[in-house]
Image 1 (cartoon, rainbow over the protein chains, first blue to last red):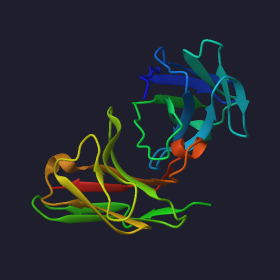
Image 2: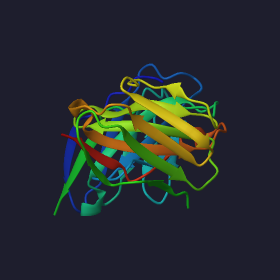
Image 3: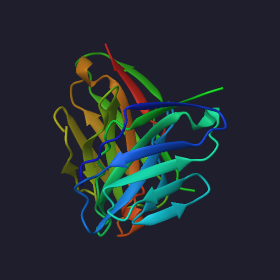
Length: 112
Length: 116
C-alpha cells in the first residue's frame, strides 16, 4: 500500500464544508483511493472510493486531481454527528485477499 | 446489512489469564481480521484469515493466537494476558473478491479489554 499523509486534526463548525486532504505521492497506476470514517467507540466504516476526477455519494465527495498524488474528501455542511476520525487508504483493488493498513487518520471535531 | 458481532463490549481480566475474544459475521465473508486500536497508533493488524482453518500473521501477532473452525467465526486468543494488551480490539470481515469489495471491510463494535 502506498504511504499516505493526512493532517492529524481539524476543527470546524456546524454548517460548514470540510475538506480533508490526503497526500499519496507514490500512488501506483492501479491504486485506488479509499476513505473510512470512525465514530467514537465504533469500528471504522467504508465511506467512499475513487480512482480519478470526482466521486460523490450520499455521505461525501472525493476529489482526485489528474496527477493523483493527493485526494480531498469533502463533507458538505457538517453537523455535530460528523465528528469522527477519517482515514485515507491507497492501494490496488485487484486482489480480494487484503488486509488494510490504517494510519492515524484525521480527527475532525465539529463545534456547534 | 452485514453484521459483525463481538462477544463482549467490555472485558476485565487479570494478568496471566487466558482470554478469548469471539467474532461472528453473518454475510458469508471469506476474509476475517483482528485489529487492535490504541491512542495515537491507529489500527494495527494482529491476525487475519482468508478461509476456514487458515491464518496469517499481521503486524503485531506476538502474544496472540487465532482460531477459525467455521467460516462465520474468528476467535482471538490471548494465551497469557499482560497489561500491555489492554486495548480496544476490533474484528472485521470482507469478501474475497477483487474490486471495491477488497477494500470494504465491515467492522464489529469492538471489545475494550482491560488487563489488571
